[in-house]
Amino acid sequence: MSIDTAKGVLGDATVAELEAALRGTVVRPGDADYDEARSVWNAAHDKHPALIVRCAGTADVVRAVEFARSQDLLVAVRGGAHSIAGFSTCDDGIVIDLSAMKGAVVDPVRRRVVAQAGMTWGDLDHETQAFGLAVTGGLVSSTGISGFTLGGGVGWLLRRHGLASDNVTAAEVVTADGRVVRADPREHPELFWALRGGGGNFGVVTSLEYELHPVGPQVLGGLIFYPAAEARQVITRWREEFDRMPDDLTTLVNLTTAPPLPFLPPEVHGTRVVIVGGMYAGDPAAGEAAVAPLRSLGTPIADVMGPLPYTGMQTLIDPLWTRGAHNYFTSAFIEPSDTAIDAVLRHHLTTPTPRSELHLHQLGGAFARVPAEATAFSQRDSGVLCNVIARSPDTTDFDAHIAWARAARREISRNGHGAMYVNFTGDAAEDKVRASYPEAVHERLVRVKDAYDPTNMFRLNQNIRPSAAA
Ligand code: FAD
Image (cartoon, rainbow, N blue to C red; front, top):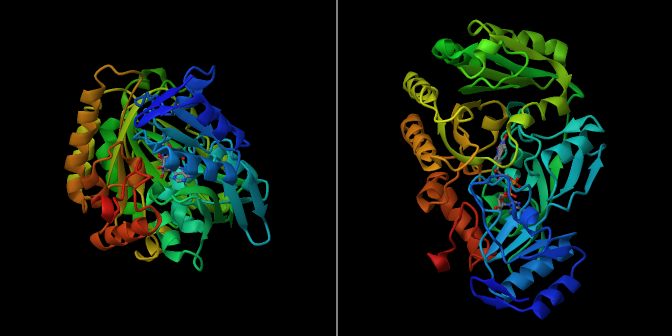
């Protein structure tokens, strides 16, 4: 059976030749596992690729890239499949799926791990915590390490150890011309710079090496719920605590609707609440004093903060973030001024669905001390990252929900430089991408793109357009 692609028809023999050259497998339309293989976390993107190449290792990735080039196929690269904008799938092109590549080697003496690109944070935390070590990972354990890290990587260790990308010490990359290169401070240093914040623009990353840190196994963390009626006071007091908070403590405010959790009084279920989340990365006993102010920002409805395993913290909110819903995220780096708080509170009162919410990620600490020019992620000077999330179980009124999120973002972002976090956006528009990087950083990213992907083979991402395609 031949397969239609955006550029022509792929014959059976051509696909069979590709498959014979792989350790992994090829999934195509009509295969029993095609629907499962083409699905991504965000159900808003229901695409039908011509081929999904499930790579078993770097050699398969080289073959898939060469095949895509020879057949002039649109390329989507997939790690954990959590792209909000749906970049890890496509219609009529090829998906280079790395999700079977889950090997990791931890070196506890050097405190390093080399992790293959298909790992999720659940996978990697599992391996590193066996040695009492960790690196900044995502708040939801099913998120892939690769897309997350290439865009930056915000998590509970951010103020103690910076972004995930700040901890990358080397990467193995298959470039658009099928070469395998190592990017580190000595080899391909400009590529190494660009990979840390510039997203999936420069090639297929097959493994990442991270610096690890002693964390856990027990940490102090959790969530404290306050009524929405106290939201202004809670956020204002939270902001006032910033200067006193140690780097070991990273916090987050979530303006949402209370889910029917067993520890919440039934009358609170379905009402708007403000949740203060936090994790203290050091000794849990020492953390009690640090988190004490979080317990008295208002009158808590429920306080579920206490000692727990680090892996427990990393999976705490997993049940709320399962696959299959329709999602749109948009974001802004801001200062938590009174006008920003006003805007956030107003849009909380009009969230279009119970699972739509606004997150305020506290920044600062180690994250802010990384020099702006050290990596392509260059938004180091804002106090807070606001993520506006529209999430609904199906397509009903989804466009209106997106409009709510965009309106909220428009107003809230006036309290910052206009920059977005590329990992927290469902938009691919070029002006949004440009606004995410200072001009000089964007120009440097274009130079790296010109050197490694001059024809824009890797364009399903927050795209840095090469000069030749400008
Ligand atoms: P994928 O969809 O597989 O990849 C996304 C894109 O990244 C791809 O289209 C490609 O352009 C690029 N890419 C992925 N892998 C590679 C590779 N190996 N080589 C080259 N390019 C690649 N972000 C945070 O910072 N902190 C959070 O706590 C957080 N929580 C999240 C929770 C949920 C439920 C979701 C859906 C997202 C969350 N995010 C978070 C955003 C997340 O960082 C991005 O969605 C990220 O792109 C996910 O990476 P992935 O590998 O799972 O995604």
